[in-house]
Length: 147
Image (cartoon, rainbow, N blue to C red; front, side, top):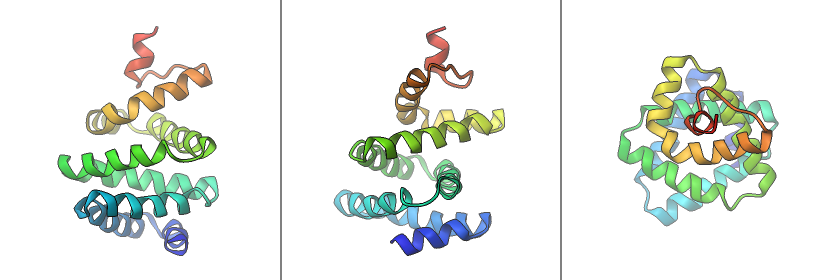
C-alpha cells in the first residue's frame, strides 16, 4: 500500500484523481470491516509521506469525495472519521491542518459545495483545530457563531 500511495503522490493531478477515485469507489462498495481495513492501510501509508505529498493526496481525495453520490460519500467519510480518531494525535492534527489550508484556499463557490457535502462531518474536528490555533475562519460556521 505504501508504494501505491507514494506512486499516486508523484502523478499529475488528472492521473492521481482517476486512480484515487477508483480506489475510493471501491472502498464505498466494500462491507464496513473490509472498508475500514483497506482505508486504515491507506491512511497509515499517507502519514509517512512528506507534508506536500500528503496535501496533494488529501486535496485530490476531497475533490473525489465531492463528486461521489451522497450514500457513497457518507460511507467513506464515516469510516474515515472513525479511523482518524484512532490515529496518533500528530497525524490527526497534520491532516486537519491540511484540510483547513485547502478549505481556506478554495474558491468560495467550491468551499460552499464542500461545506454542504462534507461540512457536517468535518466541521466539528476542524473547528476544534481552530480553537487550538486561537484562530477564526470566515468559512467555518462554528467560528462565526463564536464571534
